[in-house]
Length: 425
Image 1 (tube, rainbow, N blue to C red):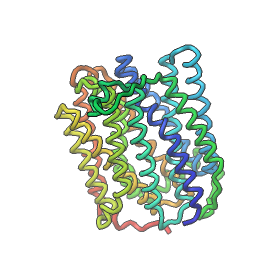
Image 2 (cartoon, rainbow, N blue to C red):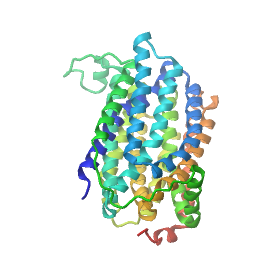
Image 3 (tube, one colour):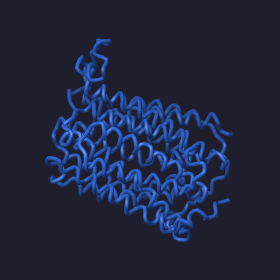
């Protein structure tokens, strides 16, 4: 395989920045739900950030196709280090982080996330031979989810702290006697900023040779966006596949960032350890999926495999709606980790095989924009105070499962055509 060292550095940078970023993205929703008791306020912040990424997402695809992917990575990691580092230093100086600045960190992380992953996968495609697409996508998924497992474990420790009661709940009360004070948000943010800086240095070291010469279009942003839409218009099967297969990812983000903190707090009446533990089980499921998904479905075509995983996701969302158990929540998150990561590996590999690299960013923008609109709609709906009262959050899970059920139909309708669609040469 060519560009091995470049891929290793890219994956290392992704792991480093993803670790602390994962802790921050767990700590912030829990901070609003448990500490401030302001789930609706966080819903508004999350909804606003998602709405703004609708326009940002349109621009991202043109950036990915227009500029060197390495330079984009350098810019976003440096931006993360500066913005989040500034908020952290404010917190150290004044002793606390105002709610508005907590929102700034969350929004900044979301904006970076929306640039990071389209760039990561396009960069991986650019420096990887076609025969290795599936392998590289699996490696990226495994690395990302292994990082999430660690960040979930550390989040439980940093948000809650460690005392004898915590150790007893884990069954370690008789063998360990340690104490760790909970970290403040400004301390978590400082760690986040430092990892962005380290990721910047790792990316700076990357040297590579593109497998295929990149075709750069210097036209206007609007023109380049039209080209992405025009490509999908000529191949509507890819459009139906991309939109339908994105459903698990859309509802998963809403589940993790908006619904689960309320579900744990109001419905299960649990603590942050359950919340972080559920996130960790999700990451473990995703890790297993990244390692074994291609082996499990080696005799099954991509479209059928994705339909199977969408049905599994539908079932566990409905299971969450009709039960009240932290154990079941852990199981549900584990299954969602399997299905979301598995779907992502298979979906991206399928799209890589059918869309040329020079236009992958622009077509990705179309899918991302539709996905953002879907998420914004559900975030706005679930921000209503109705869902924050009593056990009403279970209705949000019922609706989420129903949406995945509806999203399966395009894949079923065009099933035979999708499995016979000719790959890009």
